[in-house]
Length: 298
Image (cartoon, rainbow, N blue to C red; front, side, top):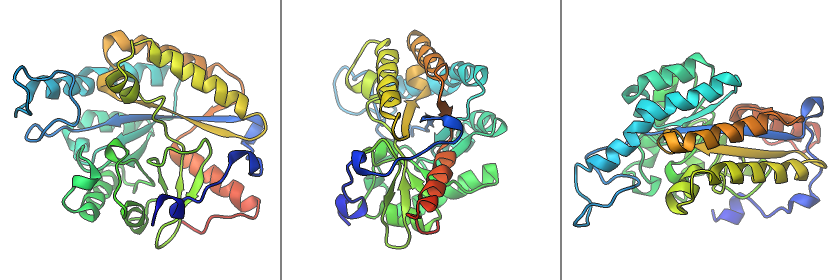
């Protein structure tokens, strides 16, 4: 199916209003991406190019750059989440659960939601067997948490033409890769619908820091600006905002304060709820059902 076949075009200003409980108007969800980078392959991203070019292996400087996030950056960021007792979503490679078990354990102990993020950090179009990769990721999360994941975020938001269909076959209920709306929308598959929950490229530390090369304080400025606009937009109908971080990026010492400041600002505003992806999913499905537009059972 082509993109418009899966998600037909729908202007947001023509939809019936979405209402949140207890007078809230905006949902914020925080997604922390934890990945394992395979030193036997080219690094998913690079901060330092080798002197003579090419893709050396092992690529120690770039592997270690990412490893810092899991050794130090994650634990620095955890202080912010604990201070506000935030429900957080952990998008984690299936292989990273064992490779970085203390991180997975800290998330499980706090009741965070785990969502699939590929078995390793590799473009889904380059995975030899996508169905097997999704199955292995699902089982790794189920074995560690005792619960199958309901949500999926492709590594680098990558999908093949078949990814939504395969995810539906494996019991997934929502995806984050379709960054095209400020409200949840239905996504068609060959078997049963999924829900696309708003994710973000614009308030994503990869885009800001690694691709656009902004100074560290841009994260706070852009996150606050995005939040304030969505807060204004949400007066007639609820909106969803994603805040996306990677421990090796926003967990770095010179950037951390700006992430912390952005969270402080967001949680201080009245009418804002911080939910996990599955909380957003359940709210949306209930709202659709109450309005007589129910999504088929998932």
